[in-house]
Amino acid sequence: MLGELVAGALADASARRSVRSIDDVERAALAAPPALDARAALAPRSSVHIIAEVKRASPSRGALASIPDPAALAALYELGGASAISVLTEERKFKGSLADLEAVRAAVSLPVLRKDFIAEPYQVFEARAAGADLVLLIVAALDQPTLSSLFTLINELGMTPLVETHSAEELDRALDLGADVVGVNARDLSTFELDKNLFGELATAIPEGVVKIAESAVTSPDDVAHYRRAGADVVLVGEALVTGDPVATLKRFLEP
Image (cartoon, rainbow, N blue to C red):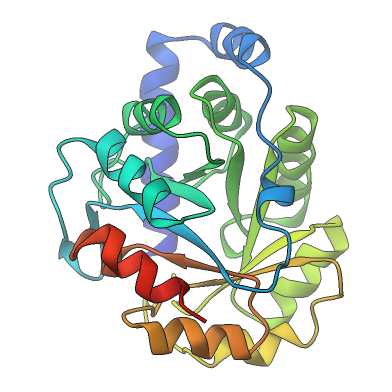
């Protein structure tokens, strides 16, 4: 499944590149206002941070919410106390778009994450041109040279790489890059199986000073508390927010 998702994302990027050249997108990226300091916004504090996600669908769950106005949803997330907004821009399985990202960026003052299957520089320039402050890099989807070059480019453009892992070996690869914002996804993107305890198993190997983000398998405040006890500085939440009252749900998740 992961290979299919990456291939689809690259095919869609190629189609966009046939309309808008990489030179045009790079110029737009360099001309964009500076990215917000997402690492500072997610720095460890006495309470957990929530990254709230704009997510219409997923391969594992199908359609979740229509979200006709992603900017309005993001504004509610900010009102509810989110520390950052994640926007799914993958078109095929998640039904997102770069237009969603641009709309969210214009609506909130929080850092915004482009969550997609990033595998080439064109997508990184697109992210910055659309106003992203963070860009997701999935270790399992990339060989180390590609991962390293994209990580460097994201930093050079002033954004923050969120490097996502799902095993001890992938965590080692992330830390070898010098990643200081690291995610552990409870969902195996090859099989889509969930392991809520994986974060705790890997978190002990994440050095002090690295922002630790728990991803997936969050449906209740107990799940957030579970990740927090295991050492999470940040919890990324999507489905539970788009399928319920986003402000009320966020407030429950942020309670100590």
